[in-house]
Image 1: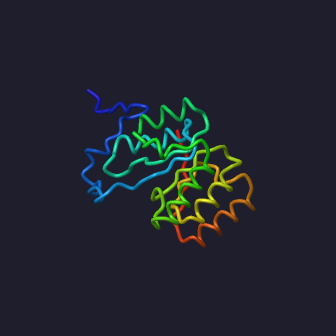
Image 2: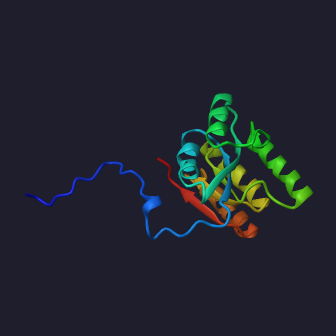
Length: 163
């Protein structure tokens, strides 16, 4: 009898049973998701499977049906559901000016590729940590601008490659 193991193409996540997994923080990292389509959904699944580590608290999505489904899945307060990233940014600016706090710890950028630079620059300026779906930007020059803005803001930037 062979000791060959058969691996599933897409194994089920085992993060909850991983003994090396760090203990949860005192409060989860909060996320604002900009773009709730396939890319945004893929990244935000972690918030659903591990709410003690991560929670989606605000979204920006122009398509009504996608917006409603995403907001319901993540139980996002209706006052933090926006039709555009600009509206989310404006609400965040108001919150910063009134109570001195951003709407979330980080922003997940999952919009169309040509918008990555504009969205990243705006949220970096408000001090958000950023997870950006690939590609970082659509030109080398835009990548350099994005890197400079994030360095100036002193925030964390991560690149992702969704399913």
